[in-house]
Image (cartoon, rainbow, N blue to C red; front, side, top):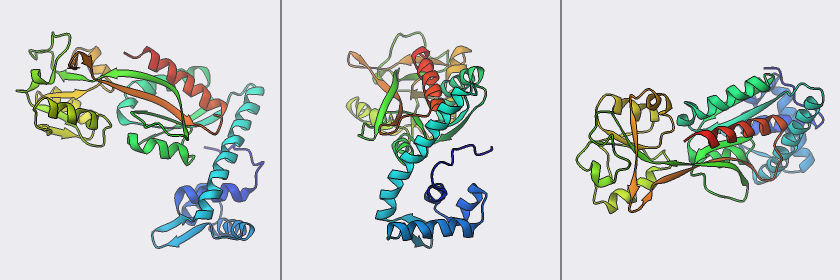
Length: 306
């Protein structure tokens, strides 16, 4: 992809940001398509200007010093503002161009994210989009360090540097084959699946911490017959008749619509067991226009997804 970012700020800031992201002069030079020596000169010049080293030179790569962390906070804001200005100028030209980086979870890439991207493409075909798959716990850092404009994940912890743009509530339920005895029920409890093989998400899923105390309270062993770190694997185990899974409908949309699987809402006491899916961004920096467009379409899909 051609780099169309505005160069209204010193090249040294772009070089510094590339080194910060990659942790290596050589890797940054490949990203920037310039010589390693040119990148190194820019970093040395910056260090001379701020009168402090910006990176620790370690065997494993370059790590930001305290001074580097301070400069990084400034650079992230500057470059994000430059993207916003570029997006606004593109919009004035009628191009509606730009680039958006989104960090999200694997399961959200089955329906929610592709549907939003499809809508974006229909209206803004010049906008490019990059999607990185991470764990929920890594979303705040990816946004804070400027690695992404938007983050979409379950149970992202609130913190001062983040703002919530949109959210949706999704019920945890028992996922089973259509011929399972529980399939016709309006809801089930953990006691109802006590004698069935249970497929649980591994600890990399945010809802595992939510399920463990519920299972303890129900007098169940906090171990599944099978535990998986992937929605696809959990789904495949259920489809093969190896047990029932505890999860939301997210990532199962095609199988549920085709009638290959059923999702029975889980009840704990008188209440359901819900998970919050949130779309968030950096609190301190306005979104570029292209990112605002994608946020709008993601919000639409969240509102329309059961």
